[in-house]
Length: 432
Image (tube, rainbow, N blue to C red; front, side):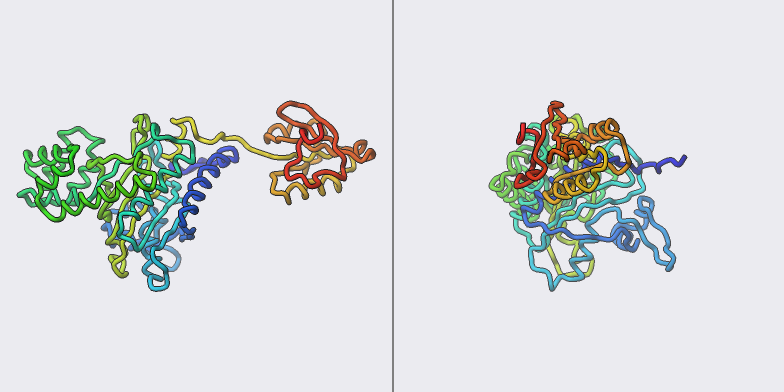
């Protein structure tokens, strides 16, 4: 008996039915916005991550030396890969570039609720537009995808911030602040005690009194307070940009889901502008469901031309937690439109009927195990067949077949020559 690796999961057919419905909802919503599907490799050179994040990131990677002596890594995220792809064909790609992808990723980290070592995300990105409308479209896609899943304004919220507001405020203090360390502290602020949070800010370079002032500033309800405090173009322009994104999001139908939350910082260093995270409005799912934001400098850092970019990546595990809490996670059950049951020497006719129903686009199963009538009915029930088409020798002698509606148990006969005929989804009701 072999055990599954820690942090990896098996998905059985009933679970995959629900997961597939969610994935298709995310992808269909993205498609309606014009995001085109891409395919990306499982392995990347390890230096794709160490060059940007330092050698210490290797501790979080599934990396190894391949048979050609190359240092490679199972991809822990998609953003560096798509950045590489944009750089490779930048001149040939029409702007804005709008891509989507659903696939697994791998990180060697502590396993906890909603966080696994192998995890799945749907990534949606825009390259080549610095306009507020691009950020707003990402927010609108995310809002539409969640509402398509059955979630409402009372179920989730987008906490929106701006990295240049945080960086600009830190610059305004008379202190030698390590900005990225301070922003990472902000990102942790809702997970740790206030005293610990302030200590992290002090370690980043602020004095204790400055740490308190900075904390108070992030809690303001009036963004003009920040402009007045900093008195710098950086903060003024960041506030204006954030307000412009929120106005566009309102026009695009996502404004009602957004609220300003300057404590939302996103921990990754490559974010440059507006950032946001999705949270459960009730707080029952205590961690961020997913997040996104603007990363305008990444393409250039990979050797490409300056290219603004913004994206979002709904993680399927945390999204499932939110949907389950709200009671909208799809039913984890198999679904079968027809089971064609063969009794006696009727295989040829039964196979023809099954083939015709499949050509109409239905999910159809038939007996491939030589089962008895009762065993076939039991199997049909186990796969949640909606209709059982019984093809028996006696019925065929009369030019008929039997249709059984499984939900009610009712059954009737139908002319063989008229089934399925011109009907797209023939059922018991058509001949009762």
